[in-house]
Image (cartoon, rainbow, N blue to C red):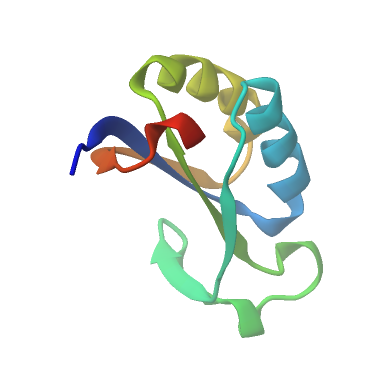
Length: 103
């Protein structure tokens, strides 16, 4: 079966920034993504959990998308201003996909 090269982009961001992030993805031409709740973790400030937070700091979300390699730079340029002053992590990995016409 024919596989096609792609990039898997995973963005962890404060839940309150989800709409701004997904709007930026849309402006970058990303046609699909998945948003997942993040229940907890640990970072520079130490461990945290969704249950232990109050108010605006009510957790994080993970936004995952698959894009063609030539769409990666526009995606990163669009999301950087959203993440620049907020908690967030972006990871990019090489992957392969079936049905490239969907991306």
